[in-house]
Image (cartoon, rainbow over all chains, first blue to last red; front, top):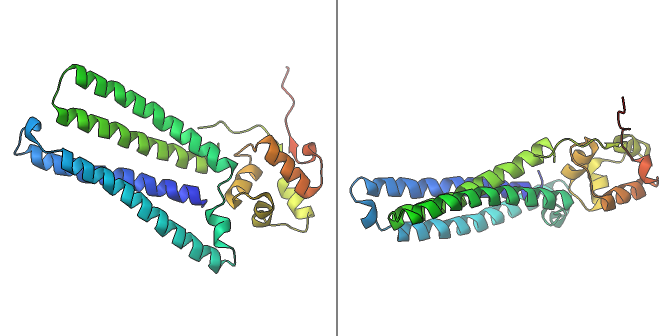
Length: 150
Length: 75
């Protein structure tokens, strides 16, 4: 598996796991508090920071695992980690473009919520959801391209 | 999702002729991942013109000695 594909798996897992925690936290608060009164800012910041940290940790873990595997096969670790070739770049651009379209569609929804003057809680949630779905769909598009051809 | 390429190739045969060169060895010569060599060989990825020339150079054959493109069906 190319290193870039491994990193795509990491981003997919992070893009699914962290929002699940955020949504679960918000649903818990909605049971007892009105949306307008919920402190969503702190959990949202935690979710965003956690995503970045987990991506970095995932990259480190994947680098170490790839290096160990490479050495075990008698190869130089940098040959497997640093080797981002033209196919990786093309697939990366393809996935990013798909994610961009999804995020753009999500922004239209956020715009509508803003025009309707709904609570900031829902606007922030919709914005976060747009980015999350864009990242998930973009990652899936990359993984499909890696496996089915591009 | 890209449609399957119509470009054909003889990389597998050329590797065999070149001392049964492995996909990993070819990937190392080209500076690409082994998965990219596999994808090109299986017709799942059309390499750039630059990489196509590099592949041809590795085997010491002209470009159309490695890659082919079917004639248009005019019927």
